[in-house]
Picture 1 (cartoon, rainbow, N blue to C red):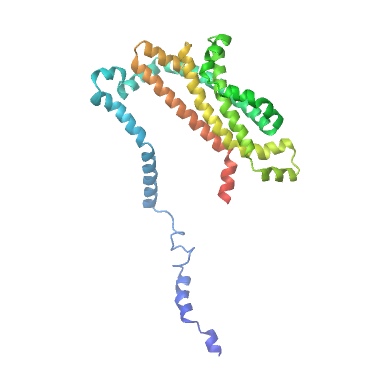
Picture 2: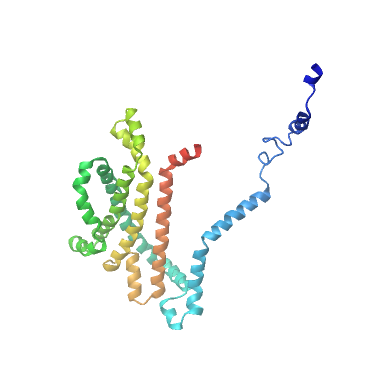
Length: 304
């Protein structure tokens, strides 16, 4: 009887040797999980990332290639006067950089847009939090806000020009007006979509109103608020360019319309290209800020 108990079975004998050698253990050094990444695997990963980046930028590359080759080989010679190839536009932009005109106009536009955008974000976030938190304030201000929200921003440009003149005040005011409502509406929506269970849990823990805003309301509403901020950033640049085209002596909008009137077509396209690059840079900056202020969501998601 003792001999039967101490003798290993055939199944155990078949399993024990690999376990002792470590060749088939899930955490052993002979498996993929225990191996260090080889140089070939690193090259494959780098090639994969490069391929994804190339695919994402392929449409832009094709557009730039069409811009370069189309006016030279596909369009009529007269069309090239009004649509110069890309290398002529880049050369005109380089000349504007060399003589300092592009930097001067870019600085003027950035000063106006940052000033108006900052005023709009601060005022819209504060007012949006108050409107979303106090129902009586929402019912009181909502009709007036709906009236102004549905009024086109550029339609009020003559009003701002008549009241504030053609100086910096009118440009900053119209930028603030254009950026105010996207931030306001998204702030209200962000606060109202906070999970009620989180609010009740915070109140049950004894948090006062200030701590409730700081610890629950604002962190939960940040992604929605930043959606409005990104929309406002784009709107502020577009409205500012249009305002500078109407009445200004500096700025990217003035550069574009003045080049068009002076028949400096490559300079005009260089100004338009600068506006596009500026918009991309502003959007990338706002996305980075959104990720910074939403790090707690990433941390929570990584632990689940």
